[in-house]
Length: 342
Image 1 (cartoon, one colour):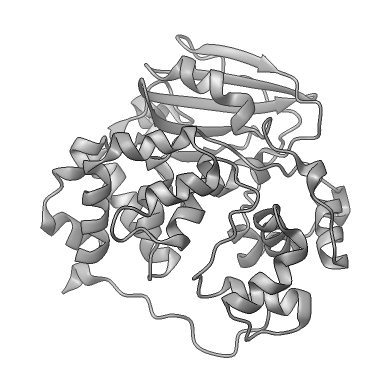
Image 2: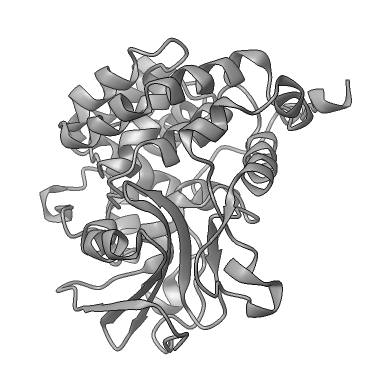
């Protein structure tokens, strides 16, 4: 981070994956019994909030916690079962501690999740705003989780609705149908898992009754897409072994999964530096305004402006979001609905 020159988080920078993790440099290990541990020294500055921020689905995400001691906690459904991971950075050393059947898998994946497979040196800023944003975020690297469904399902929930509606649906469904996270969790007083939950398995997603989707505010179109996805869950997870473009093609075979959703997934599962999000309501206007003063830019204009960043367009778009430069609002917010009240 850039100390006193680091800008405060805004709605736009939060959307760019900025989660404030206080006291990161002085974090201590939890010392809870039964956990497996791993230490790793990254040869670059690391900002946990920037790297892992895109994995959080709202401030009350039951699968994600940040704690005052500077640690980030994640509960994941790994290929070998549920697991909880606590990550902290102390004096440049990453300390990971994990619990549950998926503990070893999570610790093995830890360096890649923190950006080991990313190559930010391949990025060359072409605009002053982008160069400044990059300079102020030296700890930014693109995460690679190696998991598809944990990004695909919440991305489907975010289709065509406000983020608040999508976050609420994710929170309600995971808390009701997920399983308590293994290990102590960030709040031992809250019981096993510390109030965190691992998302449901594909079979459990498939058995959620229609009225529970309705109560969570999820319309039939999105619910049906998730049901189609979990029916071919194994095929979806196989996409982790593909390069990002081919992985998007695999995901888009499922009706209801388009370029917007597949890009949002591979940005997280693959650390795809070029998977720019198209079809977004706000992103073209933000990119157009930041780079050309054009708040009415559409996808075509956005892609034209990002062309100099070919191969790194997602990283460029994310730095633009993190810059906080966004056009002033000139129309009411998208209305928030709740079909669960109908």
